[in-house]
Each structure stands twice: as C-alpha cells, then as structure tokens.
Image (tube, rainbow, N blue to C red; front, side, top):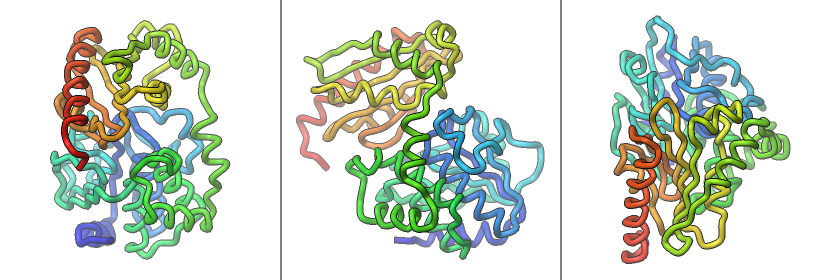
Length: 328
C-alpha cells in the first residue's frame, strides 16, 4: 500500500529542478535498478538528474539502460533533493554520505528494517520485496509512463532481491508488478541472461579461489569462504566481481549460515546469507551492518583472520538463537 511518506517524496521530487540519486556501496541489482528507473522517470519529467555510486557497476549489471551514467563522486554543485535508494542507513552510502546530507531535502526509499535513518522524508516499507517495488509505486505517483527501459531496470531490482522469485519475500504484490513490467517491455530471458550468465574471467577465478578456501563449522551448519587482497590481485579482479559467490556457499546441503569475507583496502567486507529461521541481519548489526533476515552485509576494520573469528562467534550465537526461539 502506498503510504504518506511516498506521497511526500513524490511532492518533493515534483517541486525539484535538480535531483541527486545515490546507490549504496557494493551495488546490487535493486539499488541500481531503483536509481536508474527513477532517474529515467525524473528526466522524462524535465528534471536534471545526477546518479552516483561510490563503487563501480558490476559487469552483470552494465547492460541496464543508463548504467554508464553513474558517477563515483558527487559533483560540487547544489541539488534541490537527494534520494538514497535501498541504503538501509547513511553508512551504506560510503564516501557519498556527506555530500548527500548537504542537500536541503534528503529522501530515503528503502525496504530494509534498520533504524539508522537520516532522511527528511523516510519512505520505508519492509513488506516490499525490493526497493524497486516502491520506486514503481513512486513513478506511478509522479504520473510518469513506465517505458521499456524503466521496466527493465525495475524488473532487475525485483528479480534479484527475490532471488528470481524464489525467496520467502516473494509475494503477490511483487509478482503483479513484475507481470506489468513485462507488459511494458521488460524481457525476463534477456535480463536473466545478463544478470546470471555473464561473468568476467576475473569473477570466475575469484569463485574458484573462494570455494577453495571453504571451511565448515558446527557440523556443517556454518560455512565460510574468504578472498584476500592477493586473491584479487592474482585474478585481476575487484570487489564488483564477487557478486553471487556467497550464494554458492549457501547452496551446500546442510549450511544454515554462509559467510564470504573479502579483504578490501585494509578492511574486510562481509556478505552473509542464511536459510530460515536464521536471521543474518541481526548478526551483521553486531558489526555496524544490516540487511534482511536471509541476506545482509557489514564491514569489519580488522585483519581477515580476526574478522573471521569474530564472525564465527556471532554466527554461532545467531544459530543458537534461531533454534531456541519461535520464528517471528
């Protein structure tokens, strides 16, 4: 259901001339699809739009209409409105956060459950399968048409955040919107081919290195994989090439919690995945991160061995909580 905050966001965007749209670090299909779709709609409405993301666009998403327009830093100019999409708090903006905060009106559009909110307008709906669902509803409020390019970007957001409509967050609402997006020109086959079947050589090498590092704990219920700075260098790859690796770890029979640790610029980025009833967002929040029950992330400023040790302790506690308490 469309709530008042989304209507307030539509009103603020309608009144704005220059709009900044910001994605979260380590971007996924939802944050980029949401930003690109909203950017196209606002451009159609006559707005001057700037899209920013602190990290590079991963190869599987570079087919998305408008993906080559992302900047890595915010230009030194004034914006009427800044919109943070799918960010689950200011920290997920990374180096962009100070510039986003400078805008006279900051809007958050999100579907995460975190409480680290910083926007003047906070349009958050944790029942939405993806932020792209909310952006679809916002574009309708803005009375802008859903073009084939907008439909493609929104479909990517919904498809990826529902695990191709396999995850427990898949509901009739997102399926109905996805069907309408197909009617508007989104091609599910072509989109899935780009997102799931397009990998660089470096990404493929990283997958092998990560799986070679695999370790199992708690009788196979917790699995970890790690990628060191040396792994990235030898593969000629970047963090953008790690998309989807953690899902291979979670796919192992019996695994309840999967952890992928990546050594980036002296810190450790972590992707966490789980099977119900384990809540990895709760684990990630212990390290200043966040996300969803079955998919979350965090960054730990420790050497990778120490980070893994602390994560394992938190994962063991999370596993114990999940199996000693009734599912919410």
